[in-house]
Length: 317
Image 1: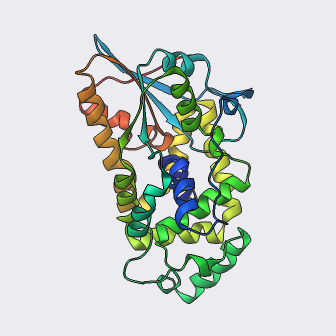
Image 2 (image 1 turned 90 degrees about the vertical axis):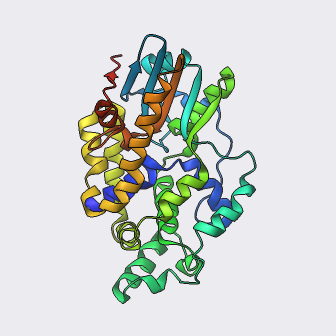
């Protein structure tokens, strides 16, 4: 179960789904994921009120809000209201993990360079005989033909399979937090900027150790039903603002993949904390929205800010 939670946390709480959908439409079999339709404000229409956690960092002339997101959500959750909406409305700009280029086709060279193995090594050659059998059977249940995935790196295959699994369960990118926030920012004329580039995010994923990439791949292949239960629990804890539980779920499997955790979580959190600390030198109000896993548990952004003597306060609403 730990490996399952780790895989889903890394695939969905860390990397924006908009990126995954765009690159899959360009460089992988169409069965993996269809490029989402443009997000609309209707994605924020609510049937059930939820209150995810929100934090604030401020000094005399600067306010920075920190909001943890889930990149895919089911329609009908009302989270973009109350304290979150108030904080967003008072902000001058939106910062998210990465901003995609207007032309998704411009990502094609990056996909070929990072997601496709340049040495000609195949996916199946990386697996033991037992793993290959489980991989083929498990992915077939998701509707994926593993023969089409042979040229791809394990991290890319895992990510696409994870997104497909979650999408099949009713979670939608257009209902995800980033998409709703981007629609609102565009409507209000707020600039949208990234904390990282697409190239950097691909580099992070591609640099994870192969053995740890394979662990994630096999977790999805072997126990997808249990994986979905884990993801449902993550979303439930996010919805209720239960940061302690969310942190436990999101980071439960980090011990099994320490190098991946360092690359995808801890190092990035440390850099973002430094960015926030430096941003306090400029006046204004910023709304930062990043995957919820970055704001919960061990070595969170808040913990790194604390080490820099920057006070972080949870917003009560």
